[in-house]
Amino acid sequence: MDNSNTRDIPLRDLLLIVGDYLREGLRYWWVCIIAGLLVGGYLAWDAKNTPLTYVAPITFVLNDNSGGGGVGSLLGQFGLDSGGGTGATPDKILALAKSQKIIHSVLLDSVLVDDQSDRIANHFLRVYHLPAEWELKDGEQSIRNGAIAAMSEKEKSLLKRLHQFVLHEDNGILRINAEKKTEIIKVTVTTLNEDLSLALATNIYDKLSLFYTKESTGSSRASVDKLRYKADSVAAALSAAEYQLATTMDTRLDIQQQRGLLRQAQLDRQVQILSLSYAEILRNLETADFALSSRTPFFQTVDVPFTPLYQDQPSWKLQLVYGCLGGGFFGFLLVCVLKFYRSVMNP
Image 1: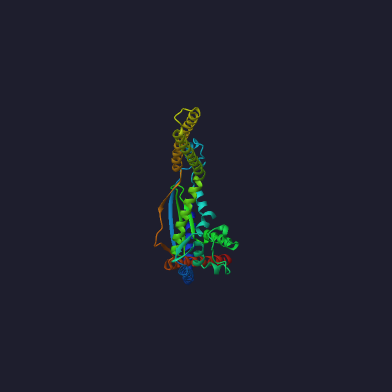
Image 2 (image 1 turned 90 degrees about the horizontal axis):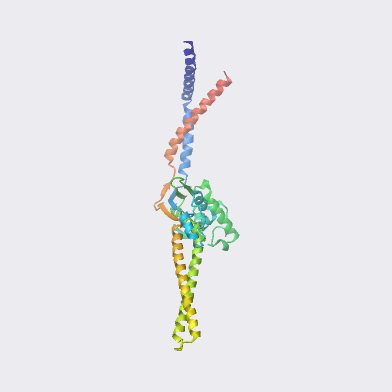
């Protein structure tokens, strides 16, 4: 009986303490209201001053057959480089998409934004008012050359700065992620201009797919090209030998001279050897070319952005409600903390 009473006392005291703090919060209700209005007003003001952005997401999958055992063995039979690839990984695609090779080539592309044809880099400078923000001097406010080798030092520096600006997380311009299970890769571009968002997203996908395809099949494709060059050389030699044989047979006298017969036999044997070699090279070339095409990575888009793009801007009304609720709760906590402080200092 006594044990039951001792267990009831702490619970009753706890309820009394909670009730006491609630009454203290109701007593100073104006603190909660003022805190809620201040926080809600600030969040609403911040939402109304947040610029409108345009979101251009593009999703795609990659079917990468590089490094396939059967195809690699088939290429190896003809002395071709199988590439030694290990297959595509999401991390590799993400790293390539953010690399200087891809981003620089995209920034130097010329596109139409607001009916103005210019490089994407210069569109970024104009749309985001970067020359004024970065305090760029005259002659440093645009990129004129399309090749890095032809750029001045100032243009190269500006290009690197734009690269960092695009990838900076606080700017929220470029986000790339990949689903590990589905292997679906998503590139999301968010800028202040609808045309710029669309152009940047599509150009990144185009440059990435083209570069990855060349990079993963470059060595094997070079080997196939060598085999094709060899086939062309043998075909030219065979054509020349056949022409010489026909000429010898047409100009040979009726008298069977040994030298003429010997030359005809040599040319006939050369034509036969070249014909067999040419046929074998063609067979190997067709097989190797088919194997190479089978292991070429294939990019397939899932969702492609198109206008009108999704407009992203926080609602000031929702921010006002969330701010009032959060600020009111913060004001209540402040009242509770002050009451606890007084109870400790004045027991």
